[in-house]
Every structure is written in structure tokens, then in C-alpha cells.
Image (cartoon, rainbow, N blue to C red; front, side, top):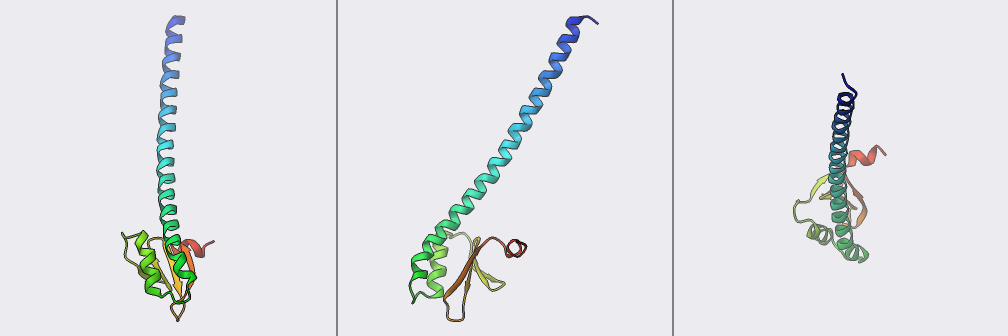
Length: 116
């Protein structure tokens, strides 16, 4: 085999290897961006809900229904549901006492919170 054939073969292998590396990097970047966008959307939604309920929580006469309506106004996609003592509106969990006052607010599934 001549030196030119070896050089061309080496360059072709190098080109294919670099293209595979770039393709992997672009795929990895796309997946990373997808997760980052999802996290940003969820954080924005939670911030909107927190800002919506904040003025009501500051009032002494705010009812449970008013707080849930305010939290739902930012997230009209999902209906509130109760689970493990929390009322969940999207990813925001609200815990009320027996008088209907908000005691605590958490984010995300309870299984993740308990493991921390």
C-alpha cells in the first residue's frame, strides 16, 4: 500500500470519528436543553402560583378556597387533589390546618421530599 492510500484512509477514519463525536455532542446538548427547559417551565409555574397566593396568605381572613383558587389561577391545567395531607395544585403542595389556614407549602412529589 502506498503512503497516499494510508494517509487518505487515516484522514477518512479521522473525519468519520470527528463527525460521530460532533453528532453525540449535539444529541447530548439537545437532551440537556430539553431538561433545562422543563425545569425552567416548572419553576416559572411554581413562582407564579406562589406570587398568586402570597397576598392572600398574608391576610388573616383568607379561606382555603380563596388560596386554592389563587393557586389554580396560575395553573388552570390540573385540578387540585388531596394526598398525604397536602392539597396539590400542579407541583405545589399546600397543607392547611383545621381552621383552613395555610401551614406549609412544598414542591414536587412527597416521595422526593421524604428521601432528602
